[in-house]
Length: 171
Image 1 (cartoon, rainbow, N blue to C red):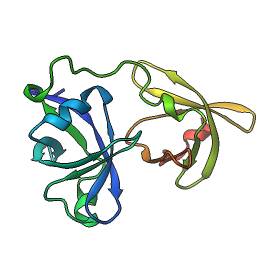
Image 2: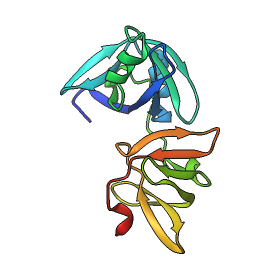
Image 3: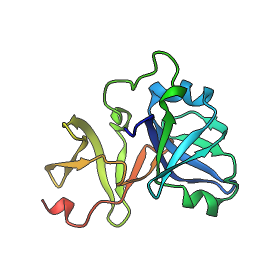
């Protein structure tokens, strides 16, 4: 956490053509986000303020920020960390404990290069991150569910698309 700020989540990919972004948000901070004057996106070491125009709920949230009005602008702000000022947190706001990705059990994990790797059958929580458990060729394989590797979560299709490092499945 940066001094005076709390990590709210991360922007993902642009959503449609009008500048909205998909985002992963810490559920416990959403009421504070809705009440806050501004949300901050980290860019080149700076926290840039944006006014929130719209917020749509879901496992993958859709946020529309003032001044980001088309897909090209949204692309510049994708895959960035989101913050709120600590002073904007509502009383009692806190991260919700538990596994952040537990809703992914039963989803199919797709790699951008390799395609469908199989169904996520379980999640394991390790000190630094959560791991998806898959059976690939009768072998239990652990895949790190790190936000930098997640490209998109397609809840309606029950799919998570990831960009896995080369050689990860060879371990």
